[in-house]
Length: 402
Image (cartoon, rainbow, N blue to C red):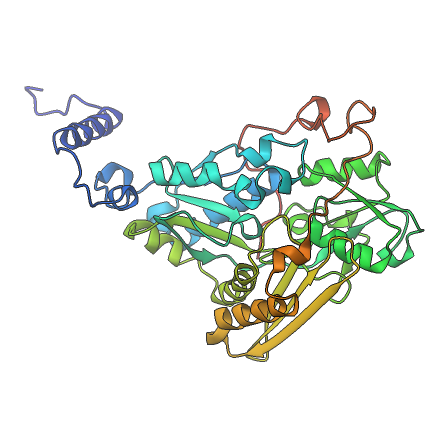
């Protein structure tokens, strides 16, 4: 004003900055045809956005726990830039896998069901990065995106949860085990071919509720998820690799960004835990060599022992009648090579056609609805009544990872 005072509040000045930035962008003109959308978005220079990270995630309690863990790590790594509570915004994105809950994953598209909508939001610039459970991520990434970071890995083993037996071997013949995983089913049937595995999907809390209701005699979950949600007290036993080899990338969190996004490369690169990334890269190379997806009983785990990378891999018939294993030990620098060679070895053992070896077996439908109690050919009712998932996107308040 005439007295030299600024007539605008800080909030109004911020809004003017946004408007001027947008106005400038409006008159710049169309981007050059050879520029990819990811490259254009990665090079945005509107200063008002540079201190804000929009982090995309699914809305399940476990996914939110992982997203808030990532937010915490970003604040610790960049306290001056990302230390404020509103510096990193968590955006919940509902995926097809979260909405289609009455069918097995293999029947509705497999792993990509939990990442497709996140991919779209990332490429469109709605979010700057996406936090994933790595075992949900396909071995191929959408062009224009990269996955340069894995956070420190949790316990990778499967947790056995049952009031009827301390281990799978202790369950009676004909016991019903809830799992949507062909990998777990195959290894359970190898232990006892009289077991009956039925689909049990939904978030961790939903699956535990099904077990309490007596719909199944036992279930199996990734121990990592139970750890992250402070639910370890439900675990009956932790299964070692020789009993049930875990899924590729189980227990690992990955962060995906756009290619050529220098800001996010700097932020996310600082969070990478190299020992985890080395192991996950080896496992995913194994899966890729076998053309693996949700239709295939494949397991693979790598870990660093005495400075060397140790890998174990497995493929099986869905009915558990045939289980083939392989193992490797080598330098960390050969991680991807080891995984690829292990996959190629097992592929050769089944005549070069792994998909034909796996066949078309499936997990049986759940015997009755979790909500109504009536017979059903699917699941039904996951989002009704007490099974409804909190859609607020708030931090579920689980334990912080170390």
